[in-house]
Image (cartoon, rainbow, N blue to C red; front, side, top):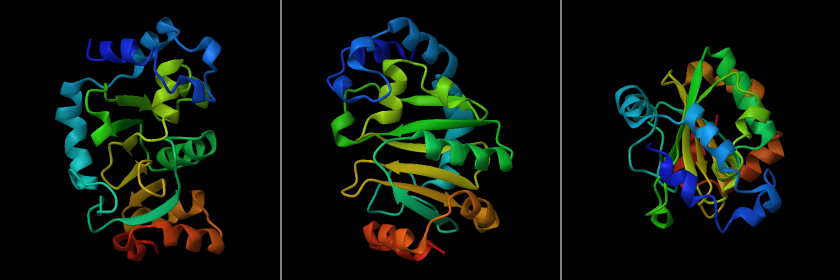
Length: 213
């Protein structure tokens, strides 16, 4: 199993005491963890054949902040980050994915210096998944969703949008990129007050400031 290392490695993870989703007392339920991975693990061959080419159409390979990670035709919306998803921002993105006609979305962990030797996440979820189901994998879903330094690419089958969780950047950020024809959809579901938008803009690397419309 491609995910067997995840089951063993994260069972006794040093970060477990900081989880809000899975209290320390119930951390380590291997049955829940394995069931979750059986359902939602993205096999390497499927990733390479179907999803990696889409990823390459959205994101510039090998890049992370402060470099540009989106191709030049993408506009962005940015917000404060720190983890892959909170319930509110997941539900916002879910509505967008449903509106643009996605059936599945994938979560691909981006390698970082400190992740060398750690099992990396590569997951595939149905767009209509509930928050309760998304968080049902005990320590596996807790690490995936809450680990405050892991960075991820999130995207679907359409190479017109993507989300990058830049959690290890000096100012943790969520950056959603989209092509101009989808701007009205993302701006509808990710509304920001002018003050908030200006505040976030100051946290962005210089190369990103002109991408906010």
